[in-house]
Structure formats: structure tokens, C-alpha cells
Amino acid sequence: MSAVPDRPVETPQQWLRYAEGDLTVAEREMHAPAPVYHVICFLCQSAAEKFLKAYLISRGWSLEKTHDLVTLLGRCAGYEAGFAA
Image (cartoon, rainbow, N blue to C red):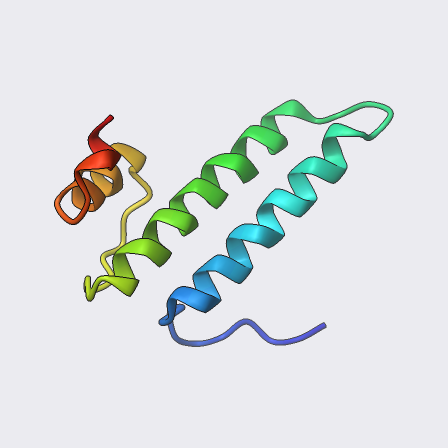
């Protein structure tokens, strides 16, 4: 097992890779004989957060520690109005 990095994820590509991993595990769990739905929901929320952070970082945003999707969507809407919808 590899060590946990000692610094935050810094590039959009890293955020996208982690988000895709969250979705992969969530999808796998959806097909399990007895899906653990609260874990699936957690992973989907986590993936959404990571996708939004990838977008923001690609626009030059400085990483802030937040897990609030509404806050992140608001920041995204500052770059692209379509996020407000």
C-alpha cells in the first residue's frame, strides 16, 4: 500500500483521477449483492467535489479547504455562468 501524500492535490489532473476513482468504487458498490447506499452517496458527493475543484484549479483558483458543493458551485459560476443553472 502506498503512503498518503503529505501535501494537497495540486493539479486538475490529480483531482480528476481521484474523482474518477470515487465514481468507479461507487458504481462497483451499486452492483454489489447488498449495496451500502450511504457509502455510495458519500463517494458520489466526494467525486462531485473533486470534479469541481479540478475545474476551479484549471481556472487558476487557489485551493481552499471546503467540502461544500454549493460554495464550490458558486465559485465555478464566477468563471462560467452555466454552473449557476
